[in-house]
Length: 460
Image (cartoon, rainbow, N blue to C red; front, side, top):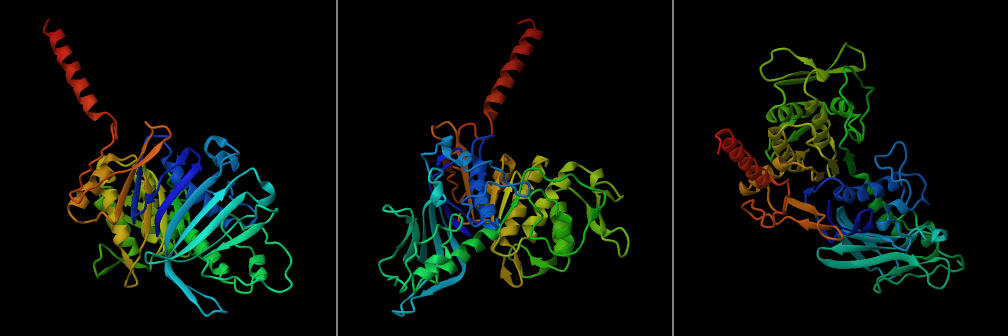
C-alpha cells in the first residue's frame, strides 16, 4: 500500500504537498481541476515500468495504454524545459527486506520503502533523470539510503549512499556508470563497478512489484454486449475500459471471499450478484454459456418487479457501467492498488451511496484466511458517495485510518490540494465553499422566484 505521495511540476500541479494515503483514498474536485493528474502520475510510471524499452525515462503511452500524454514536455508544469518533474512516495513492502554487506557482515532491514526522483527534459544525453534515491525504512527509522545522481564533473552518473554502508570498487573496472534504467533503476554497471552492490537489483525489483500491483479502471467503460466471447485463462484485471470483465468473472468462479471481516466465505459470483442487488440495481443476475462447449457467454438480469431475465443491453446503462467496477474490486489479487475514475458513472443517487459501502466491503474483504489488503484510489464527483462514507465513519464501520479524502481548490494560485478534516463523528470541519455546487443559493433563488411569481399572479 502507498502510504504517502507528493508530486511537483506535473501537469497542472506545481506542488500537491504531502498526501496521506489510506486503504480508501478519495479525490474530489471540479472538472479539469487537476484531481485526475494525481492518479495519472502513478499510471504514467506504471506504463513506464511495463514498457519494454528500458531507456525510456517516462513512457508517454501508445495505442494500448490507458494514458497517452504525447511527450514528456507535455507533462511538465507550464511545459517549461527548465523545470523538473519531482515525485516521492512511501509504500509498504510485502515482507521485510534484508540487505547484507558481504564484507563487514552488517545487515540492514526494513518493512517500507521511500523513493524520490527528479526528471527533466533538457539533458537528453543523460536520459532526463537528474537523480533518484531509495530509503529503506524500518518502522520509523531510516535503515539505509542509496541512489544515483548526475555527476557535476563529467557526463555520467555517480552513486550516493548512506555513510554506514561502504561500497568497494571492483579491481580493474575503469568504465563509467551507465544511465539509470527508466526513472528508477540501477543499471548492471553498478553491480559490476562495486563488489558489494548486488543488492540494488532487489531495489529495482521492489519498485517493479509496486507498480505491477496497480490496476486502473477509467471513467468510460465499454458498452454492454449480448454475447461475450470468453477464451479461458485469467486476465490480470477487467481492463482499463472494462473489456475483460466477463473473462475475469468466469475465471473467478471457483474463488471465495469473506466479507466485512466475517469468517464465512461466499463464492465470487454470489458476492457480485449480492452487491448489485444491495445497490438496488437487480433482483437476479447470471453469467452462463449460451451452449455447452461454446466459449460464448451471455449476461442475464432481472430487475425489481420483473419476473423475466433479459440481456444486459436491455436494462439501464448503469448496470453495465458498474459491473466492471464491482468485478475489479473483488477480482484484484491481494495487495493490489486499484485506481478508478468516476466509478459512480450512470448511477442514481441511492446506488452512488451504496457504492461507498461496496468499497468498504472490498477493503475489509479476505481470501485464503487472510485479509486481501487492497488499496483504493477513487476520483469521484458524487456527494452521495461522500455522505455515505461520513455516515459509516460515525457508525464505526470505517475508521479515520482507513479513509482519507482530498479536495482540489482551484480558487488559489497555484492550485492547492486540501485534506478534508473528517472527525470520528463523520463531520467535515473544513467543508470547502461550493463543494458540490451552490445548493443553498439555488434554494434561496427558487424561493425568491416563487414569491415574485405569486405576487405577480395576485396583482401585488
